[in-house]
Length: 421
Image 1 (tube, rainbow, N blue to C red):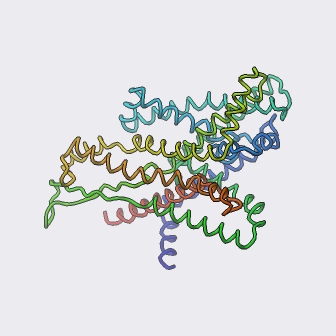
Image 2: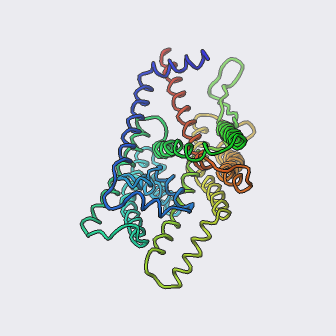
Image 3: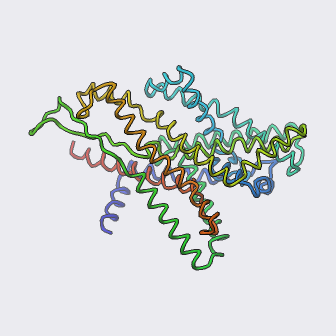
């Protein structure tokens, strides 16, 4: 206990960490205030009716930051920003110029970030119009005048841009990753309501099973997220008593973090949003019939779980190739005189690191995919009656908490190191 108290004192006693925590709390306050300001023209009840009885609402609400049901100015939240990030990262595989920009260091990444922001604006406009048009087609909202419609779309778009800005501010000056932090806040905000409406209705056995399963899931996610393989690196130019100095390259099964989960639910929500839009329009019988069948398939829990699993696994490998550049790592090692014992510097080192990373990523991706659908499987098997939080929500929550923990620990280590300089 004394150890934790001392750690807390060190955290609160460090100006930099304290300022980052306060800044993150301010972002939380601003975000929740935005979620409480209604947008003109769309009542909250209409959005709830649109999502009722469908997995679509949970997916879109999660990726928007948990504020979609409020019908506030921040209703569409981070969804356009995340979709823009996905589009640009996918385009990076077919457009060499984008890939070159990412390799140019901070300046190149800033340019890609600017492209992402610019793409977010038309996506936010389109999503705002599609949501209104869908609600209008189902008769859930009335007809708006042109000026009212433009005002409503502009308000939702501006709210999305502000949320995107808050996410980037959090990444720069706060604790935790920006987008994942805001999604984490949205998930946390929805837990008390779910607890009061569902958990209190369970009997003692159901509560025991629920608590045990939830704790087991959290422990397993933490264990796998913190696991790592240390690849020993020797430096022939750094000599100490007893031989060359050694260091390690840590490679984790979840090197990609929780971004594959966020990308997967974002991509799954998009076709369902388009499907709702088509069903709300007066189109030909063939198109309506095809869309109805497609929406029925997407709402099928078995199909939805399979697609969620496959998308998470697929995005995990894709995102690994984006964030873990083995060629650059091998090149830097060679320049510094470092080598892995038994592996030639350069290309062979890169291939070895890639092979190890992909092997570990296979386990990590399968684990993330399985955990994301496990609560639903337990419900289908009647082992649980309800989940307070979805599997994807649990992964995001635990991932963000661990990321915040790592950031705080690294800042404490840097501060302690600076005292001896």
